[in-house]
Structures are given as C-alpha cells and as structure tokens.
Image 1 (cartoon, rainbow, N blue to C red):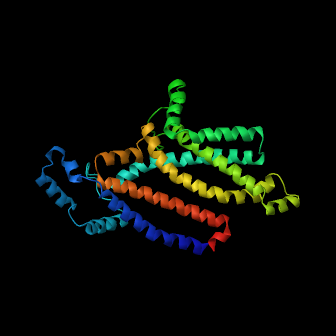
Image 2 (image 1 turned 30 degrees about the vertical axis):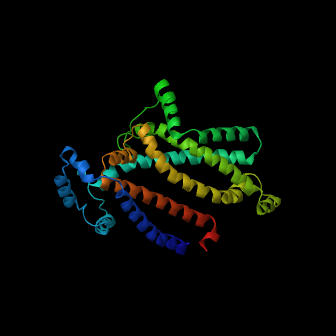
Amino acid sequence: MRWYILSRLLALLPLLFALSLLIFLLLHLIPGSAAAVILADAATPENVAALETQLGLDDPLPVQYGRWIVRVVQGDLGVSLVNGRPVAATLLARLPVTFSLAVGALLVGIVLGLGIGMLAGLRPGSLFDRISLLAASLGMALPVFWLALLLVLWFAVELRWLPAVGYTPLSQSMSGWARSLLLPWLALGLPTSGMLARQMRSALQTALQAPYIQAIRATGVDGWALLLRHALRHALLTMVTLIGFQMTRMIGGAFLVERVFAMPGMGSLATTAVLERDLPLIQGVMLVTACLVVLINLLVDLCYGWLDPRVRL
C-alpha cells in the first residue's frame, strides 16, 4: 500500500503542471485587456500600455508563466487587479463557505443514498423498493436551482422555519451556521442521494448474486452479517468511483447554490472576478478548484486500492 500511495502521488506532478499551464493559457485567450478594465474611463492607449508594462502583461507568455508558477509554488497567487488584495487571502476567506456547503451536501447524499439503497437492495420488488426508486428518479430529475427555489418557498417563505438567504460563520454561532446551511445542503444533497440510492441498490443486488457470496451463504452466514462483512465491501467498489464523481460535481453545484442563497463563497467570487476581468483572481479560483478535484481523485484511488488489493498491483 505504501508504494501504491507513492506512485499515485508521483503521478500527480505532471497532471498539476499540465493543469497550471492550461489555466494560464486559457485566460490569455480571453479577448480584451485587463488593464483597460482596470482603467475604465481613463483607458487611453497610452495609459493601457503603461499599466500593462507596470503589471508585466506585455512580457512574452513563457516569461509571464514562469513568473506566475514560481509565485504559486511559494504560496503567492498574486494580487487582485481590482481591489489590490492578495488573492490567497481572498480565497481563504471564501473557501470555508464553499467547503462547508459541499461537504455537508455530500454527507446528506451519502447517508440518505447509501441507506435507502441498502434497504432497497435487500428487498428487491417490495413496496419500499418501488417507492424509493420513484423518489430517487424524481430527485435526480429536478434541477438543483429549481429544487433550491422550492425549498426556499416552502421552508423559508411559507413556514418561516429557516432563513432564505445569507450565511452565518461557525465562529459566531453553531446553530446559526447549521440553520443557514440546511436548505443549501438539502438542495445540493438530495439529487446526489437519489443517484447513489439507485446505484447502491444495483451494486448490492449484483454483489449478493455473486458465486462467492452464495458459497458464504451456504455455510450459514446470512442477514446483516453477510451484508456488512462480505457483500457491502464488494458493492462499495462501484460506489467509491461514483461518490468521487459526485464530490467533484459538488464543487460546481456549490457555486450555483451559493448564487441562489446569496452565500459569500467561491461561486460569487468567481462571478465577480470574471465580470471585472480580474485575471489573478480568476487564475486563483480555477487553480484552487482544479487542485481540489485532483485531490478528490487521489482519495478515490487510495480508497479503491484499500478496498481491492488487486488494484495495488
């Protein structure tokens, strides 16, 4: 397992290099000049040229990339072209909001999805199985933003149980933090739970029909002992990949849900940076998001190797 972890870590190095180069080049394909956006009404050709020279935007692309990647390795993501604040500090202030939203929604999806999928897989064809399949299909069909609006209408506007918009930091109040995130968690987690429930049901049924499971059952092992000790481990091999995919999907979904609930996270920050053509801030958001996706894929690979020793070979 040690060599497997080391090999996966070494494989990340060329991937991270390719991602950084792609992020850098994509932003330079955007038409227009960031200096012109910063200067606004004072954007004369002379002023734009002077500001580009000051910011180093007129240097050759290899020089700009080399200067940028050296700073990134040192933890310096640059300074915002609009407000002059360090990009790293700005991202650190917004990241806890997006992280809390994505992780909480993923936990909602995993707990509901795997729980319902296990119960449905143990009783295929039952009334509970049919109802759960219908509910899972309905949850997967509803768009996230539409489900978010429905939850706001029901629980915030009609019942007045939860706040409709805003975010309360955990440092201020734990109950207020949970109340402000409950509706976003449900909006983002319920569709995920539907997909996980359907896949868990199918994976568990396939595992229970495997020859080695039938042989274990013939020895007298049955019920929850058979499920938890043998069948569930086999079913989780399929679920780990799907959960990893859902984790990456949560990041993009969190950006959208933040806009619906007016939460000060990475989503609103990215939108503002694009509208203002703040290239260092856009690069920082894209780079952090890409690193999170790469880290998630690494965790999925490690979990897969832990569950199935054959993968380590």
